Amino acid sequence: MSPVNYITEEGLKRLKDELTQLESVERPSISRQIAEARDKGDLSENAEYDAAKEAQGLLEMRIAKLKDTIANSRIIDESKIDTSKVQLLNKVTIRNTKNNTTMVYTLVSESEADLKAGKISITTPIAKGLLGKKVGDVVEIKVPSGVMSFEIIDISL
Image (cartoon, rainbow, N blue to C red; front, side, top):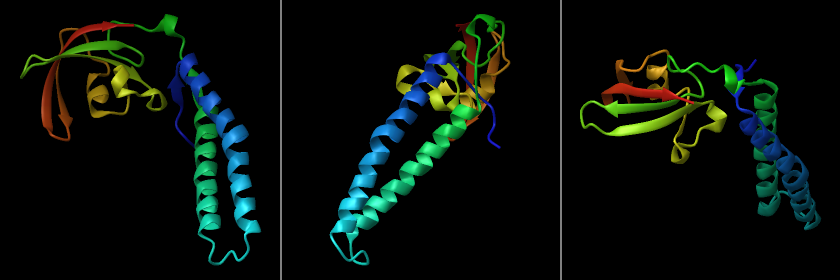
């Protein structure tokens, strides 16, 4: 069984929209490609048929993963989120103590992570290191490049 995936309403809607797109548009398209390739004759040497079947397998895997994620998702009531310590859906302002760089990240579920938008997955080393900490705390976080030290400047929604 998959772990529970805490998610925002917006994130769940995005997942459901993607699932609908895959099932109603992509799946029929791949079925047509397989049928066209099959109509061309000998399947043993038909690269188009092999490619279409492989694409179908990947699509079905993605659909199954999405269905599993949606089934195990729980919507978070954003009005009950506490900002006294770092937790899921908090916007955290941190300062790198070595070079004084300030960064702002929102901690989100894995399916909603988007680094360009400043949303990092709760499963990343930085997010794990920040969880449960308070404003003013200095945390040492082990990242792939070594150990980094961050001070928590602010926690908000």
